[in-house]
Image (cartoon, rainbow, N blue to C red; front, side, top):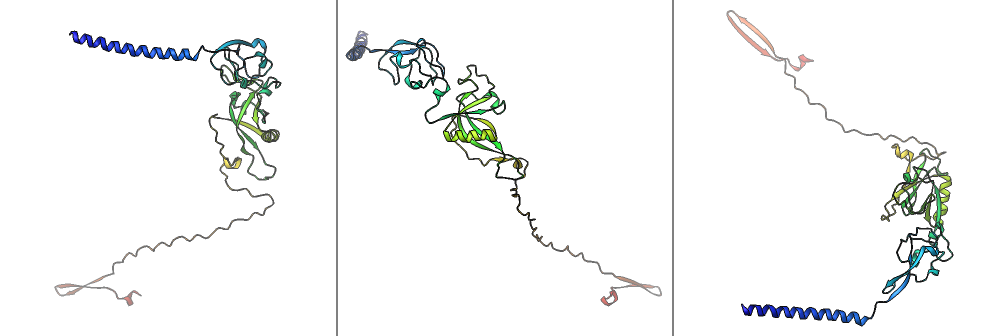
Length: 295
């Protein structure tokens, strides 16, 4: 019993020695690195929404332990009077890439990337997808109208004009609704290239425009042929251009397979019976008519 207690005490002593050595090494490494560096950085004093202009009262200075992250700002002068292009929240360090360039101002113009344009599209309750078109959404632009080069009876056509276009603002709001409620708007600003802006501006004046919501994660751009009124009602025949002679199609003669004649039903031959009386005797004679007699 005494030997067992000695073994347990020795094992505990070894474990304690190993734990002490590990703690000592950790403390030694931390002391070798020196004290943690503290840097003063600019912090948002309140929530800053997209398009707002940063003022001195919107900022404060706080301590940041350790190395600075990319884009952190250490002086208020580098932030004041710059527009916010990405939301920032109270107590969050101000990052330089979340602000517009110096002199770009505030508002929606500051949120437009270089080389892009904001094109306004007039919509109504139905075209605006019942108010669910909010900033940041992705939409496809559909146009409905009749081509001036096609004088056919197929009626108006609808086709997808632009795909995967970002909504920059809806109405007078360039932020999303905090409560997630749909907002009825009359104008939607779309973020497009200069070429797309020309096409969209022309289409908004000459045709009817409808916006179709899509999943922001869906980056595919399928090619669609478009649809005409004639195809909706099942008339899939190609329309004949005006002025072209109408030719009635010839009906080809269809030869039906010859059916075999019905089987001949055999007719039982006619038999004549003659009774012959010879005194008390009676006899019968049977005979069939010959072919000459039938004729």
